[in-house]
Amino acid sequence: MASLGLVCLVILAEGEGANHGIFGGSFAEAFWTVVAFLVLLLVLGRFAWRPILAALKAR
Image (cartoon, one colour):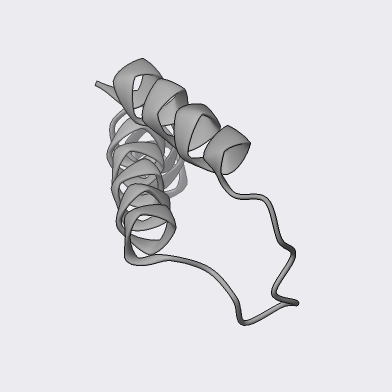
């Protein structure tokens, strides 16, 4: 899922010719950024935060 978003982002980035500054992003870029962040949050929650919190509670 994340790789699909990355491919779409690369395709969209190649199509844009002008640089509109820091606030010149498109809706597609914002959407895929949010999707990537949520995927990262899920992965970290499952494989990092839960084990860390469990170890702290066990201590």
